[in-house]
Image 1 (cartoon, rainbow, N blue to C red):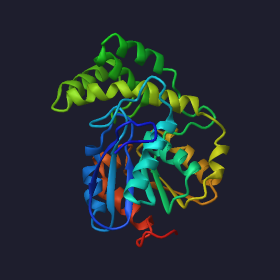
Image 2: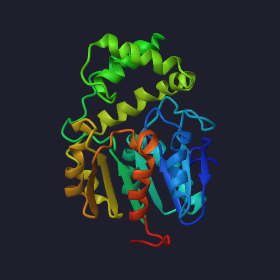
Image 3: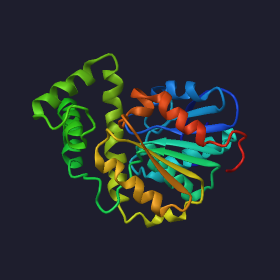
Length: 270
């Protein structure tokens, strides 16, 4: 299908029932959420977007802003007649901004890329962008892994991160991982640009569930209780033993169970 500005947007669909649109995180494609979609497909028709710069979808474009992803998700919602959204990481930030423009039957986000009061430290982004522009993908990935603290190896010396980056970029999914790195500067740049006191999210009226894992770096989960305080219709749940990649990689069944129990079973509003 096409978005409001004419950009081609592709998505994967599975299951039957009320529609749920899934918005992937940075560095992820629709197929990374196939296990999550399968878990939900018994009760919902799940539509997982390949966001701009991924798969069959069009490019981000030089003037990319988060509203482009919001437009795309709104178009998929309308096209599939869905009324619920799940967003992961940067996709969760897209979901929150979508809910500022459109009331949903339900919104679930897992560790959205929200920065409140400088909680997200993006000082590494210029170095990452410079290394990527120079074609030094391994060094750029090592910088990303070390500075975001998303790799479950703790604060080890940089050579360890370089070795991990090499494995990621030269494994079976290495070519796709390298291609997806090009989407990071614009998206992380939006996280930094949108840093605020969080007050804008008080305008969200959709029933909202904020999920996180207790094995995720604190800078990503500390904003969740604050968002639950700000958003009038929100509640926050921190899940034991889960990390940032629980929805797409490590615990899709657990996350799907939480999503499914929150969604209105008949497609109506909660």
